[in-house]
Amino acid sequence: MTDSLLRRAQHSLAPAQRRDLEGLRDLCAQDPVATVVPAMHLDAALASGVVPAGMWVVRRRSGWGRETAGLIWASANLCAVVPSTGDADADEDTRADIAAAMVGRLSRPAAIVGEADLTLDLWGRVEPWWGPVREVRARQASMVIDGAVRRVAPLSAPELHLEAVRAAREDDYDALLPACVHMFIGEVGYDPMRHGRTAYEERLRYLVRAGRAYIQYGVAEGRRQIVFKAEVGALGGGVAQLQGVWVHPALRGRGLARAGLAAVVEAVRRDHAPRVSLYVNDFNAPALRAYEAVGFRTVGTFATVMF
Image (cartoon, rainbow, N blue to C red; front, side, top):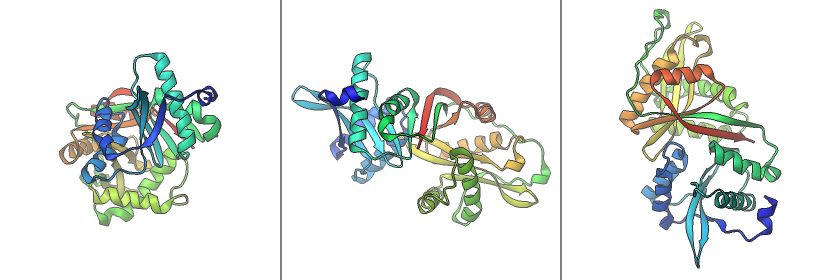
């Protein structure tokens, strides 16, 4: 990192312009599962003609001009899209320049998320400026289902009075919010209602209005409540990324996740995108088994650096 600051950089970060959008979308299309988050924002920009402030282009010097070498989405989370050139030395220089530009031009995000090799490499370069880190999850399975969904019935439990999995409506919000908060605390490690409540609730309401939050009611702890839920957290480039998969703690181990996921995947394919993806910590063996049982397969490795 220090060496990159002492030489003339061949790469720079510049705010994306409308003329960049088509090329950036083509860049994401090289790996649509790994790039679903920036692709989502590119799709919105192409539809509206408004380029969001978090969209940055990696430009490489080429003769007297510049060519596009990558993309950085920098908002609450930072996602980098920088395809390899096949030349290890050239890739090293590219990443060094990008890291230096990130430190100089961007604010530290809440997390860096994306393809593991690139994410961890960039983190290692910016750590002296952006550290300390709260947690690094270095190996997360990036999974996709693009074949037939395997229908998996939950264990027979008539006392649960399970209702069908469906898209949440606005009148489900008050029941959905506690389930989402419980999942968030367990997964991320802090309470979003104490840190950023307004943004968290606005995001959840948006997903509900967009038909991207899925729920299942049943009886848990003696009362009717949501027992399974999942959201389409990112949607772009023909890929829907599931996030927030959760089963009520009192009902885990009964097959609700497998049955619920199968229903969610079918609904998402019908209503949102033909390919459904997600990523999961490699140490979460029960979740991995549930996803594989439905038909998800591992196609890559993600990493998440949380500040």
